[in-house]
Image (tube, rainbow, N blue to C red; front, side):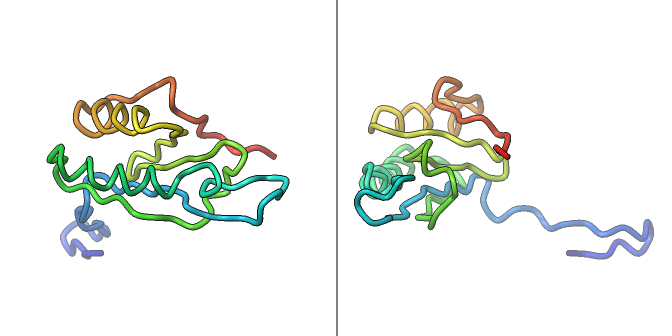
Length: 120
């Protein structure tokens, strides 16, 4: 953070990435009641997304593997920051749509989005 002495306010630095994508790759034991994203294929989808983001030339984006994002029942899932948009990804076609519609066009693949709110 930078202190702006004239206004006496704190200014956050610009983000390092325009889009930081975290793909849940958590793996629980087989048969776990919540399941896990990795058991549903998230690791391969993350690898695919990483390669496709690079091939598509998405500027200033980073795809990372994440541990549990605590949305196991909704998975496999990912979240894109700084927007904080959550998606369920089941196929490579889902990944391609998110890259095109969210990262390149700046909109969102609405039917793939997960609700933002938390359950009690």
